[in-house]
Image (cartoon, rainbow, N blue to C red; front, side):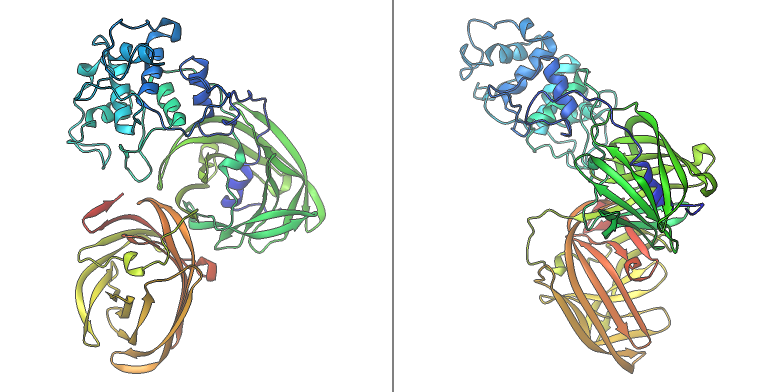
Length: 585
């Protein structure tokens, strides 16, 4: 084994080192222990606040109604169902009569002494109406603050971009989002989405947080935290600079099929296998080195609880020859939030892991795994090492359905003053739409890079056209201009030739080959952007050729660029932008 295995592979290594511990069984057949809200649903059930249906199910995705939320809150405030009084003889609301299953709960919450729920202007309560995130925040705020009058006015500056000072539930949303209460959180794009209806699994989370309910330890499935689906990529900022890890094909090891997790650039690889039992690491390959395999394969089973610690030992083989043994020690420390360039990632598994491989060297680090995303952060510096990495961007194939065909002019705004800021292997840089240039008798928008490089772009009914560029000394023109057409469909390919002029002198023929590969979700420091067009572009001009992948987000533009798949070492991801007067993040 190489004395120094790449950080990307060690991140993968560390994800595999936990051993199983016993986990409680799920109480509901439709809420398995790996459900994202399992422990919260267990919490409200064990506290007697939310129960299942007659068939034994919980139905976590059912939308919460106004009668149900009154039941939850009444039980929480009163200390259980038995402590909720029967209610007055005369109903407060004409549509909630004493025979209504939630009558006493609604009356209890509507009592002025608690002032949790209120009726509509026509005097009705509308018990079967759905509860959205704005209304939920109002009910919960009143319940935990001690009535409506006790809920403060809220800060002068909104926490969420879609819940402004004039929104009816502003002070309630802000109260619930305040770290002192920590009942609600926003989405990765900075929104709260107050009009989205609340489901029963979400309500269980809010109730547990609001009333400090005891929840069981969550059984963690590592396969939920380390996705190995084709098309996944992760870009990291590290002490080694920017690099990308990608799921790239498969390999056979000892008759078993493993997923190839490749580091780009460099070519180092980790061979992983996801199964119902857990996640296995069968071997690694350092850049330019022999293949190293482990017998038995290192495995972290599904169904974990925090606090696990132990050691696993395996024989090490290099190209089939036994060279020694390696021992991996681990401690599953805690579950916590991680602030990475891509944003705040909640409920990450923090693991301390140590590798002892004799003459091959040793390594010890903290690693954080984000559910559904992968390695969010790694750091060996607390143990005297120098390796660290933090997630800058991630991509995965969007599940669809898609708006098809795709118009490229919708994915590449050219408004004057629009600006994009990027993190890249060559350092930070910006692009700005600034002014126009007449090319071939037509005005083109200038897309100006921070180093002065300027491209000429124009949107038409046919699509996006580029007429060339200027590097500050020479001007290169394409005649006819190159076209990225509207109306593209998945897997469509297009090739176009043009005559290349440099400072007005024809220098030969150029060609662009365009391939619409797939539709990806892209996570960057600027936000989470669904359904991005992933394009493979190859531009050839006399004496030079460039090929790269480009991701375009609808209404925003380029959110990621990468040529490492073609032997380059360039990567850039969107850090922030102002497009059409809207700022990201």
